[in-house]
Image 1 (tube, one colour):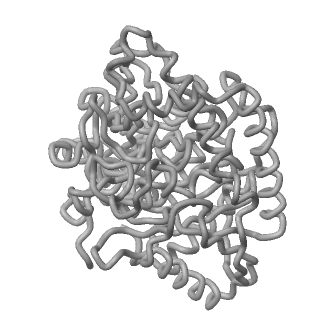
Image 2 (spheres, rainbow, N blue to C red):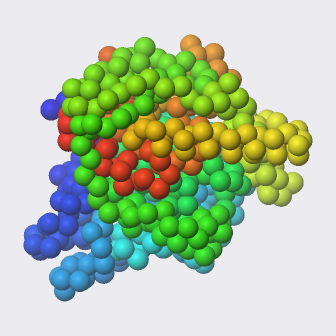
Length: 468
């Protein structure tokens, strides 16, 4: 087996949800042992990779002991009862401060869990700590003045991506099984792509969010894991209606029950050209290889163009800039000098957007969303690279050779799907010649999260050596 970030992890840290559930039910493993192994792994890797802002030794042990009692009584709360879990340090946890990667954040602990965390806790997840994020999750790499530089375990000189970079590192090295990420332009999918993971940005509203993100309805919450089945179990636990999240709406998004997907006969659109930036040659080669492999499995694949490709980057910019302006405006004026300069510049661009310009962008977003719904009514799935480029050096917004001024200009395969709010999963899809992960993105119709996960699982079954 090739060396991976998981290679030197203790065996207990390599087990997934279904493995742990079997062991717990037989009584030959305890959630306490597994939690202690995960915490030990977190302690061991954090000085080098900086994945955690807080490791909860005491709280995790208490939760694991409670889980052990339930398994002994034959009454687990769910399949993820007793499974080590991390929460991105941008999502509220009862009894903990949430620092948002910012020197301006309030250190006071929160009185209640965010709905997604409450759902995981109700399912018996053992929360072992909080993971790093850039300031307010504003960019697709992970470094901040508050928590420092988070590094890619495949190569510490490289970024793990962001903004859920700490979660990605924790997952890749085995410091926990289930990891909560957020995704406003690719912040689940980018770090999963850069670190060889599986993850999904669910249909908007599938997972409740409270309080609402200043970045609005482009922001999603979802799972990051090493294996697709773990993401499916985690999403099942996280999902649900919560009246605190008005933006969820009252509608039914459909079942998350397992869907077994065969590629034979599926009609798949192949999206190979992002609306901005460029595609790294090795990423393009990996997509071409995937097309050939899926065709050999019986799928019918056709190249497609992204609807509104000529304007969609500008539409995203208006949404993202204005969200950044709103987030910065929420910080007391006397503390704003502590905010990262590049974020202040982004916020200033948002403050300069006029109300008519923002409304026009929102209307154009609606047209794009309609076109994407129509596209996914025509095709069973759409595939694309997870990211157009592999990981690059830390402390940069883009690789030097790209000559791109903004992070989202290399994230053109991710941010459009935030605007359309459709489910999009990423799976590992090989490596560059330099040994950095490459990924494949699988996009489905709104509400078709189970189908997307089923297709991702089928891809994992067909190409297991890509997964760690």
